[in-house]
Length: 139
Image (cartoon, rainbow, N blue to C red; front, side, top):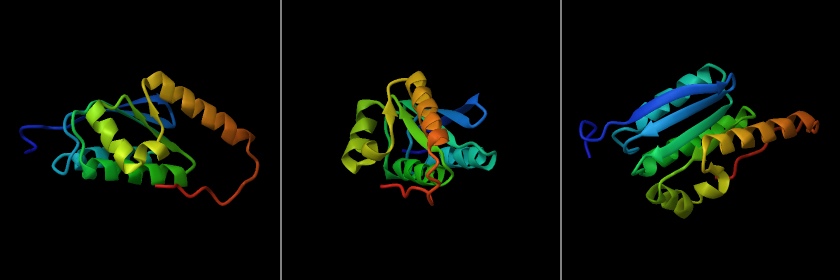
């Protein structure tokens, strides 16, 4: 698959100051994954902690795309944030299930469901005064 035949489109919106919503469309593979990686890095740089990845228009994802999601998850967790996957198509869901990523990274059917999960985790975090050294992600 060449990038000319299957370009990746990534639209970034900010539902809240610390949340970036990435609407991804196209093949997320070795030829195109750099595009998503750059968008994620830019939002990390701007202090975003929560990342919502709408994959409903991604018909195919290989290990390159999955690795970007796992790395984003690890980096977000280190900064007290989160990554949520939204509405993956069955082929992408299967990859997430087979690799165990779907056990670690929350998957929601809609943007609203993901936003509610972020709100819930933020509410829990503000009441958690344990102040531990952070939680290691299990990937």
